[in-house]
Amino acid sequence: MPAWLQLGFVYCLVLGAVWTRRGPANSFFVFGAVICIALFLWLDDPSLQTLGLKLPKAATFFKILGLGVMLTVSLVFLAVLTGQFQQPSYAISWWNASQYAIWALMQQFMLQSFFYVRMESVLGSSRAVWGTALLFSVAHIPSPLLTVASFAGGVIFCEIFRRYRSIYPLGLIHAALGLTIAASYSDALLHHMRVGIGYLTFHG
Image (cartoon, rainbow, N blue to C red; front, side, top):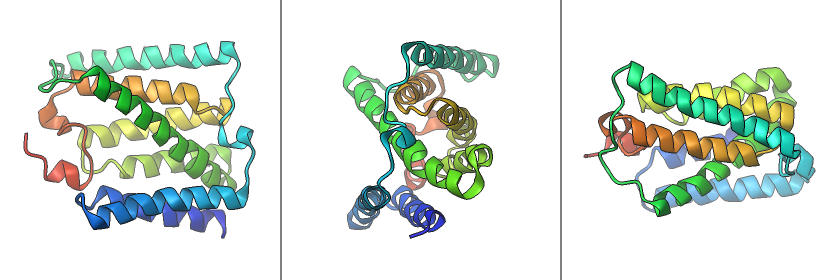
């Protein structure tokens, strides 16, 4: 199956998962996306380097993490500057934080190792950065903050991946940024960091 068709098919499943309530239909879309990603990767048999599953050099790793620290501080500063900064209205436990960190790494695998790699083969590496970031952003509609943040973050994530080809530091940065947003911005705006149907049906 051509890369563009793989990309479109899985993305439709992802949107289906985002826009259906928990239940049989939602499970179908979630497991369908996971199975299709695994199947397409198995059929294509890409290298670990292509997928970004190799650890970068230590200097590169800490260079990327340094950028992540600057982005995290910038998010807090922006929250204060716009008057949005406040303590979270719900508790973020270490257990929830660790689960989110794992989810952040999984998102980077899907975003980079699957979507970006296929977008790259269709559009070329530079344009794939913007195309993949757009897909990432649309998946966060209708949350206004997360839609904008995911587009900006998607461009940064994809450009770092394009240059250094490793998802591990990106997973850490993604987790740090997501938890910072949850801890710094009003839940009236974030709706517990939900997107899609979950954002619309949220009752605080």
